[in-house]
Length: 181
Image (cartoon, rainbow, N blue to C red):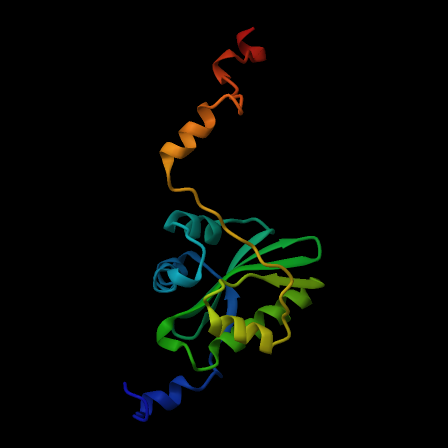
């Protein structure tokens, strides 16, 4: 739909009254993966099995949450330790962006985490994701740190570094374990 057009569907989509936050379940995984795949440019690279394992995990330290109405409209992955919660991933389905769902989801997550006793909430955002960065800053987050993610792509260079005399490699074949002594 072009800007300026409207329909009866738009008015119901703009209503945020029927949305709710809950822990993700196995029935949500396929939709979470679809949203993740549509949001890959803004999230860390993960595979589907990683997402499935988080949703099915019974761990208290990592949880997946969804913002849902009739279907999942957003998801978040949250790590928890002591009194700190870390939002590792948060994505709204691109079909629903620009309607306030990101703000609603973030505030709902914060409220839930505060009720669970977390004193500090941290999150990351990619440097080129200016809309999300703007949202977080607008809602009181501040830049605490800048993390550089480095990648080496020249495998030949890696091999030459490890084979040089400057680095001694441990030959694990010569290690004796208690079982084979």
